[in-house]
Length: 133
Ligand code: 5GP
Image: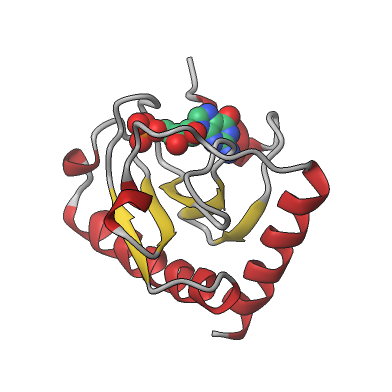
C-alpha cells in the first residue's frame, strides 16, 4: 500500500505544490507551524530518512536547500528552520519552516490553518522564487 505522500506525488491526493524534479517533490504542509511551512520528500518510498542511500540522501538535502532559499524569499523570517521528525507519516520528509524564535519549531503547539486561496497564493509565490534560483 502506498503512503499518503506517494498519493500526493501521483496527484491522487491534492497538494499545494512548490517544486518537483524527477526524484523529489516539495509541497506545503497542510497543518503548518508557520506560513510557508513546506515538506520536501523523495518520490521513492523510504520510511526512515537514514535508510536512504547516500546519493539520494545528499540530493534530497540539496533540493531542500533550494526550497528553503525560495521560502525565505517569500516569507519574512529570521531563518529557515530545517528538521526531520517523521513520527506521523512513514515516508521520509524534511520540514522547511520560516522561524523567528526557537518556539516556532515547537511541533507540540497548535497548528495554523489557512484558506485554500491563501495556501495557493503562498505556494505559487514560493514556486516562482524556486524556479528563478
Ligand atoms: P512528521 O511525520 O514529520 O511527524 O509529520 C508529518 C507532517 O506531514 C505533519 O506536519 C503534517 O501536518 C503533514 N501532513 C500529514 N498529512 C498531510 C497531507 O495529507 N498533506 C500535507 N500537505 N501535509 C500532511
